[in-house]
Image 1 (cartoon, rainbow, N blue to C red):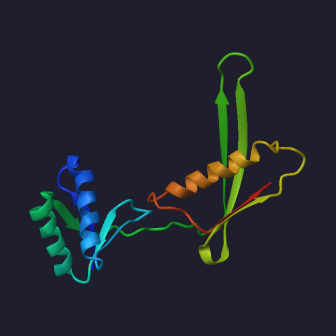
Image 2: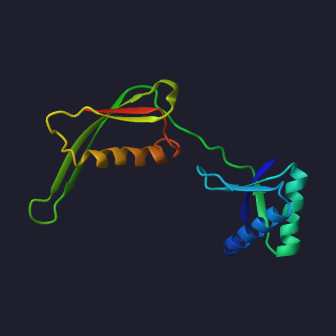
Length: 160
C-alpha cells in the first residue's frame, strides 16, 4: 500500500526526510521513494495499517507529524495528428539586434512512445549551429506538457 507523505509544517521537511530514512533502516519492508514525475515522496508498506504505524512512530520517536494522501497519477500526454506552429524571436538591444523565425511540424509516432528529431533541413535555411537549440527547445516544451502539464510522448519532428 503506497501513500504520498507531506510534512504538516514547511520547516519539518528535512527532519521528516531523516526520520523516514531511519525508519526504513529499522524496517526494510517500508519503502521510501520520490516519484520523478510528480515530485512526491511516496511511502510504501505491506498494508495501510503498516504505514499508519510507521507514521505513529514518526510522531512519537522523532516528533514530526506528516499527512498521508493518495499519490498523484503520473499522466502522460501525446498528440493525435499532425500540427504546425511558427515562432519568432525579436530582440533589439542596439546595433543589428537578433531575429529568428522557425516553423515546426510535428506528427505522432506509432505506439505513442518516444521522440524523434529528423534533421532534413537543406540549403542552410537554419544554420547548423542553431539546430541543437531548436531540438532542445522542443524537448523542454515536451517535458512540461501543453494541456495538463504532463510530459508529452510519441512525437516526431521532421525538421525541414
